[in-house]
Length: 241
Image 1 (spheres, helix red, strand yellow):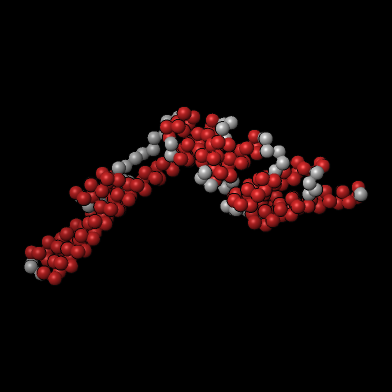
Image 2 (cartoon, rainbow, N blue to C red):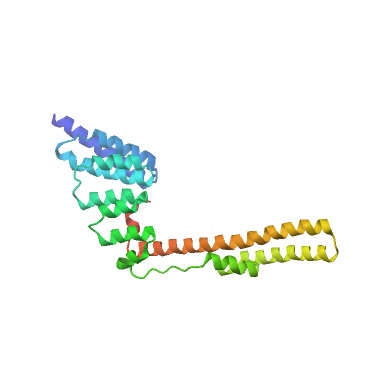
């Protein structure tokens, strides 16, 4: 009996070690498969119960890394000791990764920093600032960007941080306006209608593009502000990626 016990121990330890090697090498799917094999080889009782939970945590983290959230949830629910801070941290993270920030915040109520992180990801900077301090990403008004480009083509894109796009839009629109003017001056009606349609297309596209570019500018700087806080507070270490 003791020999069988020792053989089982050795076999499981080798499987876990192999899984860890695969994980370090970035072969995550094979590592996940090996962790699962080790999990099912381990007895449900006795001295192996803690090791079985450790393997389950490894499976959860790898499954989340691979966006296999159903698998992660399955093994997370199988962890025996659900009263530990570690379990609550991982449980909240499962909801957090699926952008269910409200549920994650409820589970993470034991930590002001983690709760503030959920507000940060929701864009509720007023609440997040209670922990993280001032958060004020750069902002550009989409309506102002559109208005500027309606006056001077490309100016709204420059305002939204796209200098070369703005210059390009100005040249294209200026060229199309000139073609309309030249066709009108020489009374070439067919060309006038064609160039007018093309000019209108470029002009409206420039105005709308400036509006969209301002929105992209804001989205980018909000993302950067969030990333800056995640880095400075070390929250990125909790992510499985």
